[in-house]
Each structure stands twice: as C-alpha cells, then as structure tokens.
Length: 108
Image 1 (spheres, rainbow, N blue to C red):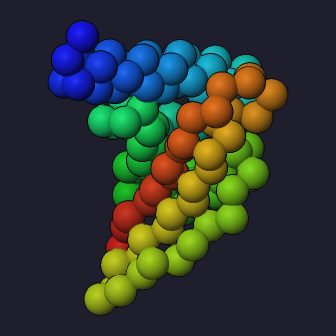
Image 2 (spheres, rainbow, N blue to C red):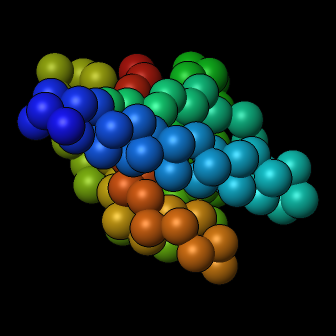
C-alpha cells in the first residue's frame, strides 16, 4: 500500500470517528435541550461547532462550553467578539477522543 493510500485511510477513519462524535453531540443537544449549533467535520477528524445566531451567539456558546467543560478564550478584536473553546475529549461521557473546537463570532 502506498503512503498516499495509508494517509487517505487514516484521514477517513479520523473523519468517521468525528462523525460518530457529532452524532453524540446531536443526541446530547436533544436530551439536554442545548441550543443548535452549526457543525463541521474537518480534515484530520476535528469537529468545528459554531454558534451562528447573532442575537444568541454568546448564550449558545456558553451553554455548550459548560456542557463540554471547556474554558473559553476571548479572542475579540476590532469591535467583534470572538470566543473559542477547545476540548480533546469529545462529548463528556461518550468515550470518543475527538477534538471539538467551539466558536462564536458576533458584534455586541
């Protein structure tokens, strides 16, 4: 097997694990009445979770940050609020070690 094929298989497996972690997150969102986020399975198997509703972005971000047990970073500049939190542990209690990057960008 070529190095390229090994890389592709590894990346597909990482993305598959992230997709399964996304199912975990969606189920948690339903069960715990968490706000809806925009989710993306990224190259390398990370999940990007974005609080996109401008009027509730901060509260949506905070609800998920608490659930995922992440410490928010404030990366705000130029009048735009940017919040980010990262976990390497996936959704708590679900057993999938997937990086989740939680982000919100909005103007206050």
